[in-house]
Amino acid sequence: MNRKYWILQLVLVSAMLLLSGCGVPMSGVDVTTTAPAGFWQSLVVWPLAKALLWLHTILENAGVPYHWGFAIIVFTLIVKIVTFPLTLTQMRGMQAQKEIQPKVQALQQKYGKDREKLAAEQMKLYQEAGVNPLSGCLPLVVQMPVLFGLYAALVTLGNALNNANFFWIPDLGFPQYSKGMSWVPEAFNAGNYGLLASYLILPILLIVSQFIMQKWMTPAAPTGNDSQAGMMQQMSLVMTLMFGVFTLQVPSGLTLYWVTSNLLQMLQQWLVTSDRFNLTGARPAVVTTGSAVQVFKSPNGDSDAPAPTVANAPAKRVIPTPVKRRKEKRK
Image 1: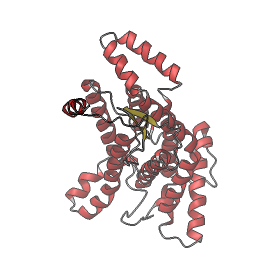
Image 2: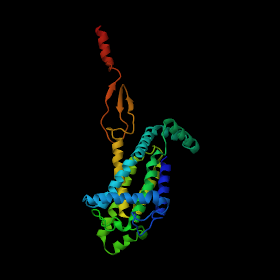
Image 3: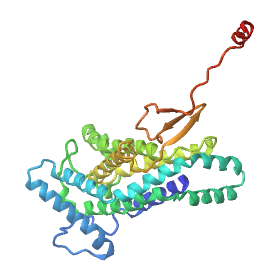
Image 4: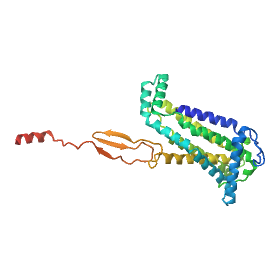
């Protein structure tokens, strides 16, 4: 499942790198007066651009500073609320996968050399447990078109984002996709280190947040399968670095959306897996030790408190052998 998940991510990111900016006017247009051209612009780009303009107008009229940046943040929050049911499905699927990991490990030990048999038995196990191995990909499949569309919307808005600063970022419309990464050596050679740093902070935050989120949300690899675990870690690192490189050649407004989305995703992960809410529907795990039964909640990183102990039977007093002999002699 993990391999399919990362392959899907690789395909989607490759499509993003190939298709970003296609089909939209690179110089920017007024979406309120210009009619969209084609299916993509009509259903995705123009609605997103108009939604951003609407949020920006509301915040600007309310006197909110950095209104363009906060419009993007509010838009991200709305997207997260709308896609929360899919996110919950993803987290429940991941929780179910964690619960059947011992059985998966047993299958890997039994059919480790027969890959076809192993795949068939794993699929049978998933079906019996009611687990969809690809359920974790649903939010990604929904988020990627939004990411494509938001980038196209930011390109379409064009001059509206010029000089739209946000805290340390001078312009949320910079850098332009047409320039690629050429602005990095240009700023470095010109000695504009402050400008370079201001546009590198968000990509660095994206890489860090993406790495933490993937470490947190990806189910642990089964023990004894070091080669697969190492491959998954390498793919995770490569994908994270690809995201970081990609954000160096797109408007900072898109990177702001991506970083905010990651932070909200981690917040949702904490809320969903918290013992207080238990939205994943995890069942307590029962561990028997000797004559006592210890009840633990499923591990989710939120609680390390010791579990209550329930005694099965009163402890029986054990009398040492020498003491027994002395009592028999007295009789």
